[in-house]
Image 1 (cartoon, rainbow, N blue to C red):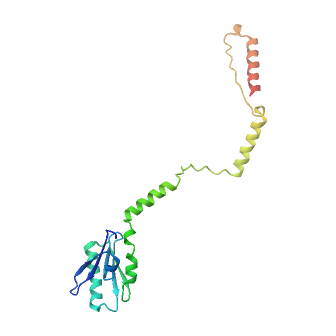
Image 2 (cartoon, helix red, strand yellow):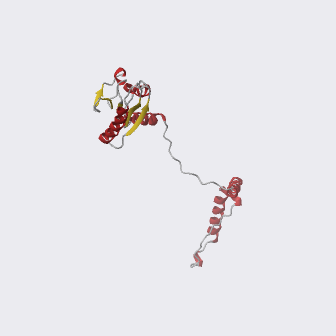
Image 3 (cartoon, rainbow, N blue to C red):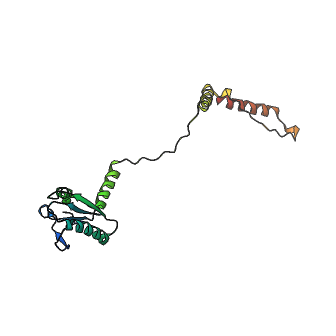
Length: 183
């Protein structure tokens, strides 16, 4: 059985008597405190349970709530001669784990099984008009650079006209054209 569970039966004078946590002894339990889930369960109705103890059972459950903390909730179990539903709830207590252990296991399973995907920045959507413009520029580039106008400025210092060589200028222009033709 889980360590975080206590079971009690109510004595004739309304006192709480601890009950061992096994299936045979739980049939006498009228109140079970589940510390893992922060619940206080009490068996409310029975043919062989005196009416006074029914009222005392709910009062004791509420006093246990004050004892253990207001974050515990009280739950009523309605049964007949034996608290069958009550026992079904706690039949598998030995296999129940602490909620922190369960959440740690789930977290480790999630981190092991789920691939971590890096978030890619969102690409802006391209409108149809922009798509056509991009395609036309791509076609121009594919046809060659001869259709794209390129200007070249050649600055010549004419302060000293005697040293100006026309042939050097023509050679320079020819080289520039050769370079442009290769593009």
